[in-house]
Amino acid sequence: MVPRGLGNTLQVMNELGAFLRARRESIAPSDAGLPQGPRRRTPGLRRAELATLAGISVEYLTRLEQGRDRNPSTEILGALADALSLTVDERVYLHRLLKATTGGVCQGTAAPARSVRPTVTAVLARLEPTPALVTNQVGDVLAYTSTYGRLMDPVPENLAWFVFTDPRAREVFPDWDQVADEWAAELRAAASLGDSYAAFMAEELRVAGGAEFHRRYESSAKLASRTGVERWRHPRAGDVRLAFETLMLPDADEQRLVVYLPADESSSAALDLLAVRDNVLQ
Image (cartoon, rainbow, N blue to C red; front, top):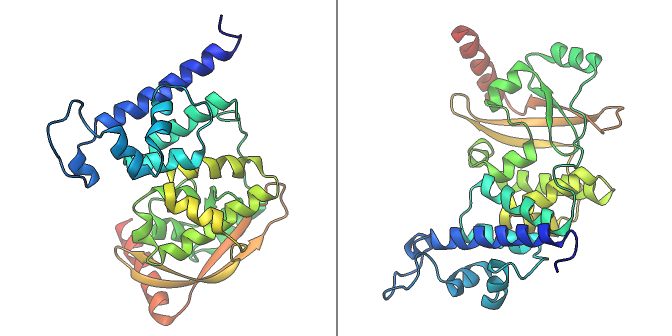
């Protein structure tokens, strides 16, 4: 007899294993950079090939696919997601299957409030045409000036998620490595201070962002910068260098106002040109 509650866990583990196996069998060896080799008995990658790509043992991968291992780490799932070239949605699904098997918090983890005080909204309006935005400590974009919207267009819901899961981030930020280190440090600091939602986001990004996020998160030994200079690239304005200042707001969710100012004359001219072009189009 299966103990009460264990049946659902086993079912989810079987779902996780079935998903991994189905994705493994859907990938041609050539797509993974492997030779086609002799005639294969099964489609896609062999277990040994996927295990090598993910850096785990064949025995462990077999236990996962057969639903016999109940505690795969997010690091292992991230490595498998990288090896299987999963989409962001597939990576999130994989992580949530894991949380369902371990009884961890998943959908029920409460996100920070997204409301912004009217006075803060009024400050943003006064800052126009300066690029500025309000975020919380996990990177949710809560409000922004129209100029920031033109610069980032389209504006993502969350900057940390954007940096690690959206290919466009490497185009927007030519110095992507530096920006990625900053957001990994931001989430690490928030999670270390007991922010459960930041910890949840970090777990999801271990899978969704793969090795790029995991390495930066684990090796982070600093706090994120509150001031500095970032280089942005816009399809019309070109490269701009923006000096930013972060102003902490008195709020339970640790909201902050980030203001960007041109760091040189060419960047100032580029932002002005962008604003003029958009105004003409309106």
